[in-house]
Every structure is written in structure tokens, then in C-alpha cells.
Amino acid sequence: MTKILMVCLGNICRSPLAEGILKSKLDADFFTVDSAGTSAYHIGNKPDARSIAVAKLNGIDISSQRARQFSKQDFKDFDVIYAMDNSNYNNIVALAANEDDKAKVKLILNTISPNQNLDVPDPYYGGDKGFDNVYHLLDNACSAIIETL
Ligand code: 4NP
Image 1 (cartoon, rainbow, N blue to C red):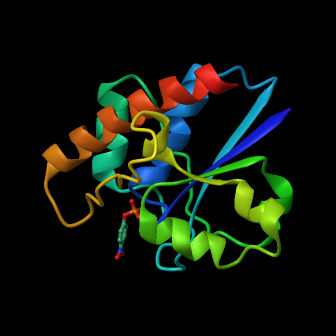
Image 2: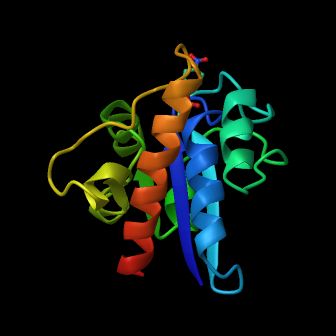
């Protein structure tokens, strides 16, 4: 079983989409996919309505997800941790206990734009177009991820 964790700031916009999209491309018998936020802002909340809507438009139901906060235990529970942006990456790595933990953390867009360290833009304060853009970035990244598995 390969275990993959998607992480953003709130765990309500980007990482729930990344979780839903990657799950839709993988066999649940062989892969675990989860998501978390570095902040505690939205613990227990459903994904943002705009993320639920763009996922639904693309045939994916993320409405039963609930936000949780990333914790040190996640380094033990997951094989690969994908950060949505550089700020998330730095916050996750700051909790790493050792180099093995650190090595599990990757920037998700480096899967499609190697070594460029690009951010998935935070769509929270923008309009629906931002969510559409995030969806397509993450769909491409998740297609690249499954090629590495
Ligand atoms: P996410 O987006 O990190 O993609 O879930 C955000 C959600 C909420 C906030 C910031 C970003 N917030 O500041 O509450």
C-alpha cells in the first residue's frame, strides 16, 4: 500500500481537490490518499463550496471530506507528502524530525514543472476562475504522479 498525503494551508480549497482527483485515478485497494492543512483554521469543515462545485463539474464528489490539521504523525503514516505551495512546504519541513521525514515532502507542481518550485495559487480570496485553474493544474499534476507510482 502506497500512502500519499496532499497538504495546503486550510485543507478546504486546494488539497481536497488534489485528494479527490488523485483518488479518482488510483485503485483504492493499493493506494491511500488523504489531505490535511498546515493551519487549524478550518478543522472539521467541509471543502469550500467552490472546490466542491468544480470537482462535481468534473465528475468527482469531494463533499464528504472534512478538514484536519497536518501533524508530525503524518510523517509516520504517509510515504509521500505533496505540498501545494512553498509556504506549505516550509511549514511541513519545519516539523520534520529527520532527513527521512524531509525527503518525503515534495512540491506538487514540480511533478509537471521539474525544479521550478511553482505554487498552486491560493484561490480562497478569488473568484470561481481561480478554482478552475487550480483544478486543471492539479489534474495535470496527479496524472504525472500516477506515472511515478
Ligand atoms: P487552501 O485555501 O489552503 O487551499 O485550503 C485557503 C483556505 C482558507 C484560508 C486560506 C487559504 N484562510 O485563510 O482561511
